[in-house]
Length: 318
Image (tube, rainbow, N blue to C red; front, side, top):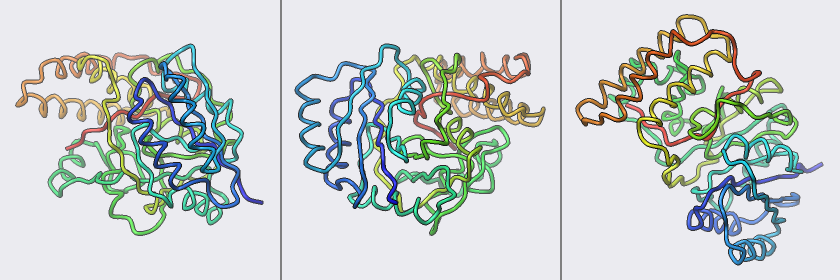
């Protein structure tokens, strides 16, 4: 029996990005013999005439249009609401600033057919790569691991910058938040997380961790799309860098990390400070310094009931 598909676009006041994304989805159309719906989970105020245009456009592509306007903003809450509303066997989360190749959805569903045990399948953002020296710096600063499918000692996902080298589907511990999918049953139990409020780096790591309790995760390099990476956080830079580290502290606590994980995160944060100094980015440095004090002074008990952070903001490595 063919699996059904729910596509979720979590968005906030980015009509141009969202329109471009929906255009690319409509061009490819629904996968063959696959019941497909598309949810717009709206944290903003999309104009009615725009939504009506989306409905007509998606209908012509064989995709059922759905819309939900949230009362409480936040990307993680959008993930929770999607898991509650979606009817498809597979839930595909896409950032509103991506463009899909025409064969993306068909390739996604073929991957689930080829890997029936998979709890989730993810893809790759075109152009994400690192130079040789950038890779060395990331390894030395614990921003990535030697294995492309594993997190670093400090819980960072920089290994995704080597995904473009893959020639075939491989196992992974984590996904890139701009294009990740899960079996609905694997993420059915999502709940709000108090410490995932505005800035949300790491929510993709959370979803991956939860889903892995149901089965393995895979990256298919054939699922490559274009990610325009529009500004994903509207917070000031000091708050962004502070929360970037704090969310990883919560992630380490959630998995019961020992001293090595916290020490590695301390070193990663020191490296980020050194990296920003030549740029005289004082607000970013101040955020990192504030977070340094929290790494070893924070309580060690797990936080979040086995769940973690929000939206995968643009990552910078090297």
